Amino acid sequence: MAAPSLSHNLSQHSISSINHHSPPLFLRLQSPTSALKPHFSNFRCSAAGSETGFFTKLGRLIKEKAKKDVEKIFSGGFTKTRDNLAVIDELLLYWNLSDTDRVLDEIEEALLVSDFGPKITIKIVESLRDDIYAGKLKSGTEIKDALKKSVLDILMNKGAKTELKLGFRKPAVIMIVGVNGGGKTTSLGKLAHRLKSEGARILLAAGDTFRAAASDQLEVWAERTGCEIVSAEKEKAKASAVLTQAVKKGKEQGYDIVLCDTSGRLHTNYSLMEELIACKKAIAKIVNGAPNEILLVLDGTTGLNMLPQAREFNEVVGITGFILTKLDGSARGGCVVSVVDELGIPVKFVGVGEGVEDLQPFEAEAFVNAIFS
Image 1 (tube, helix red, strand yellow):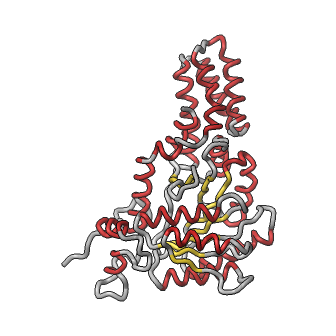
Image 2 (image 1 turned 30 degrees about the vertical axis):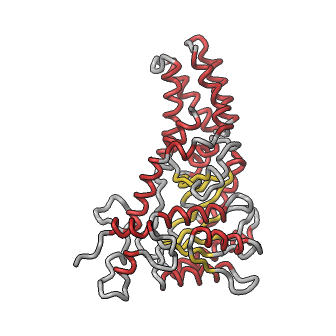
Image 3 (image 1 turned 60 degrees about the horizontal axis):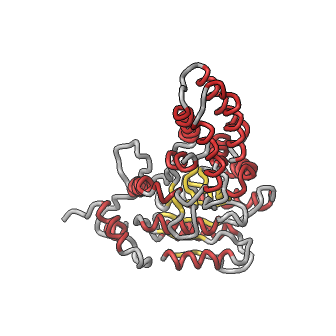
């Protein structure tokens, strides 16, 4: 009898995922110790190829759900940004050509207040000015649409690849990095919940050995999400040693993804930043090509102050994507555009609330519609 399809297995595991001690159905059927030949030993993540593996399926499911959850993603977030940008609608309601310079000056101010940054703001406003005087934009509605398109183009051109890239070896390894207080461990827990709900078998690694309560916090998330966890067996253990142990376990016991927490640090603390490099090297020794993703958690309420953090972390370990947190009210949404524009690194997830479901895949079009609604 033929083995059940991957989509069937994924669905079945989603239903029974509360029992985290049992591997998902497809792993039981296809494990190297079973009579069947392991069919998923070389997972393919690229959707461009003709082969479809578990990680490709996982990424597609998350992406599809993101599109379905458009209203949920941003409906409660960016209220401050929307308030700041609401003046644009008032300015354009009765716009006429003779008022162009004054209106554009006020649009420029609204964008700056919302943390779009001077470089992006000037580029957008001058493009609008040129198109208005060239007769390409003839109404307030057309100007508003052009403004939204300018912002969307930046996000799509420089940060389009928002899906997780999990490579082709099991386990995929994701490192979560960032400063203390930005929501790093919480984001890791929410990401574990989201990935597990789609059928992946997740192992958590408590690599934040610098802060005493960090391991306890991650254990709470492990219990909450029904995931296994590897923690330091003794005090003052090296973070790289904990992550090495976790990735080895993930490899030996057939986990799909190992999520690695790391010590929160200021981007100016070079000794702790060097620890990140050691962690990255240790992981690569266990699984070739890992870590597959290094996601930097950024606090959305800090606005443009997040840029120095992003630059430094990227220079030290090579960031593959951002998780923006605390976007449920006071965040200034223009910072999303600024960080993508400057570094060319995509935003992959956004935190829009306190609930376990409130870490959502980033959708550029939904974001633009939300802040200019």
